[in-house]
Length: 374
Ligand SMILES: [Fe+2]
Image 1 (tube, rainbow, N blue to C red):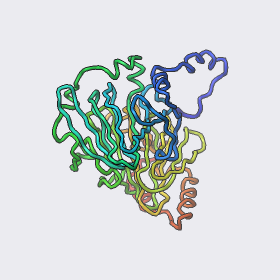
Image 2: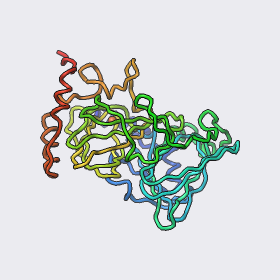
Image 3: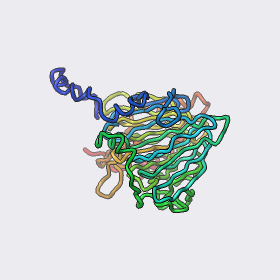
Image 4: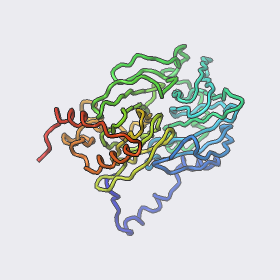
């Protein structure tokens, strides 16, 4: 939302019963004895506090964003050393990044097809809708910790019946039918898309050059387990930052490597700054501008898990977050950014004895920058 859009108390009171109403989704989380952190930023998912989670057999915490009641959520789960989680199936989709430890997951359906694959910190994969699955910690000494993004909230709110969501006997064979190479890592991208359901090492996965987002970054996109949710990885070189942009809610940005910070702001307000490190989570609220800065001596890389509501596309299918504001998109060109953006970045790099390496990106942008509207 642009600015805070605050109205009179009188009008607000007329909506107060709707505002304070618990959703079926919120009740379901609380009934499991878990907390919901309402956050657009978590400093480190690897250390965020988790609580015993009897239903899953591990520990967990939920993290919800401003519009999660209509789209997706996020949770962090820990599997104790030498343990496994309970098997489960669910009528919603789930994407997972392993934060710590190593182990394996079995996925199967009622037809009897079963696959097992191994993972470690940095691996990512998705669970096909309503497929049975079970996660195992492969170490007797170390805990496993993973972060997952699901489209559970909209499903729990639609049916308001956890038993239906978790106990429906139906194999969605178009999503998963035990294909032997289903969880084998694929390496051949098609355009920006890597058609894979498993990435063994998201931190070191080769990327594709994406000059459209500024400063010579790398990019790759995923649509795992034939789901409606998607994800992408972006990387930016030392001394660079990306262009600011805005889109719908739901993107969960998880830092995979490097150090730096993000600025986020609703239109017309001062940017707020969020420092990041490996394991930080940033969730840009609906329509807030956000901009990511690499201030470390190494390339910085993040993974973004997204619900489809984040993506607004033009008639050609291009996300408006990739298109200049000068032609009606939602991306702020370097040429149009607040001069403070550059001085703040110079200061941040200076603390590491580094200087910005943005001149080429600024120059290249000018070559095909659309004229400013009158
Ligand atoms: Fe974004």
